[in-house]
Amino acid sequence: MALKRMVVEFGMGTDIRGADYTKAAVRALRDALWHNSLNVADALGMPVDAMVVEVLIGVPKPERVDKAQVLAVLPHGTGTVKVVEGGLEIVNDAGTGSTVIANAAAIVHLDI
Figure 1: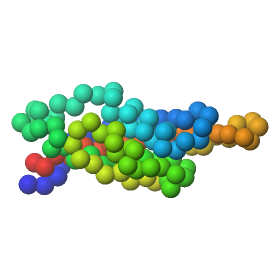
Figure 2: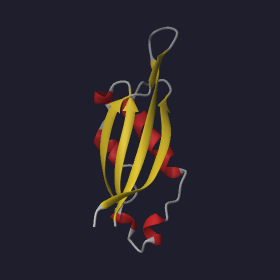
Figure 3: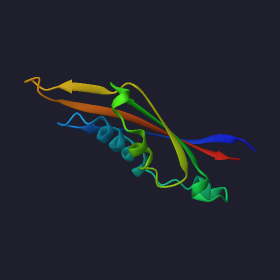
């Protein structure tokens, strides 16, 4: 058997005032996951914890994301987190803070 891509989910998350990259990334993954109810594992007679989830996060400064906190969002299965350059950071008018926008993709695989 081999891992097969079954589902790709997309989300966006923000931290409006704190420029917290991890908070924005966690919110983006939650956005991707919490808008869906995946029944693909059940439909194939597999437990939900058989899912292997590849999480991709896009933010302007990838090194500022705590991958462990993002991975902890997954309710089922196992996963990996890869953070790449993307998203947006918008500095406020005073130059004293910024809004961070993160994008997330959750790619769900099953060993079938």
